[in-house]
Image (cartoon, rainbow, N blue to C red; front, side, top):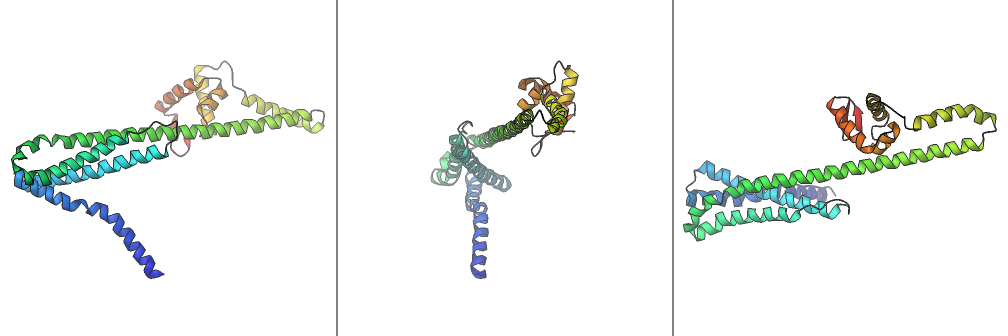
Length: 256
């Protein structure tokens, strides 16, 4: 049992190491071709080989990330341009084959290769743009899921409050209901949105709301202070700038 476990661990280690070792032969031949056919100094040839291989790994990673997003996303989420990631991986293959095969077979084309090197910067910039856009898509989907979760929690809480109010109304004639009526009235009054608040009072009320409900939705916050959802979004930006509230990935919105 221990021998099979050791072999399995060895295979896992080899599987994790192989993708990083595999580009080394290709990088060697690219560097050799740059020295022989482009008259590059050895340090520049090594740097060129590293850039080409790292861009290849980055391009494949970008393509896989965008493809996985398209496979697992919801219908309401925007699709990712996975075909552009595949194009970047194809450019890597083109540059590598051009440096290794074409120059060895047709050395006369060597004077065209320096004109191709700007593609390296283009591929790198395009990779960064695709990854940045994908991070924005994932962040927007995460925020929307959190808001839907908070909205469901608000609806459940309102349903429980409504049930309590109905039960109290059924027992109004009893002495126990008379004692609990003031407390129920206070709960109902707190759940009703305040009216005719000034701008400053509304901001203060918004801060108090998120102190009690860090994961509360914009809609619930607007109802609690008698303002619209868009006003809450604008007010949160203003409160963040003044340092009174801040957003966190774990808890939602909390005071500074």
